[in-house]
Image (cartoon, rainbow, N blue to C red; front, top):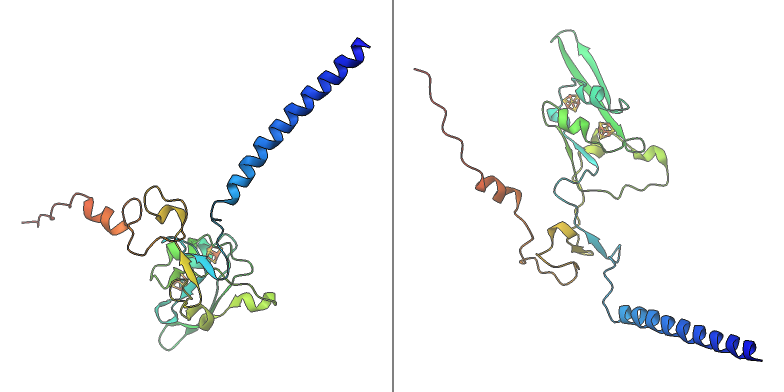
Length: 202
Ligand code: SF4
Ligand code: SF4
């Protein structure tokens, strides 16, 4: 009889303890319901990509000298530089240029090494397509102006974490005029000691 009562007592104590823990857990859960969600409501809200974001590549046909450096530095030799040698002028004539974004890994090597800076990385990342062949951009598609999160009137642009004011974790409600934490690249440049002017050789 005594053993049975002890078991009932132990069971009751354990049940009360478990209920206590559950109540504490639910209190924390319900406390979270009072907070505003930090979720970015894509596609109505979009985060502004950072300054060095590696998005879709932009290409300027007029600047390209068909040197094929971009092909050599690409991990998969992806850019297709279509040129012919003009025997009369003894110069390369560029015909077409294309990059297949279905295979590109957006490493940025081609942009880094292009000697004429005709390649650049944009902040465009919405490249989804139904047909994989439409991801193969020719020089016309590569040359069009990129879309921008900040210039789209249908989108609320939100700052990424590193660009929020000091101590702020939620991008909602942050004003354009609020200063970001840390310095802008231009401010870092201004804070560097100025190089002494080069002395001219006598
Ligand atoms: S490296 Fe630049 S200039 Fe040379 S072929 Fe590629 S895009 Fe053209
Ligand atoms: S970003 Fe990288 S993978 Fe894409 S074309 Fe340039 S070098 Fe090749």
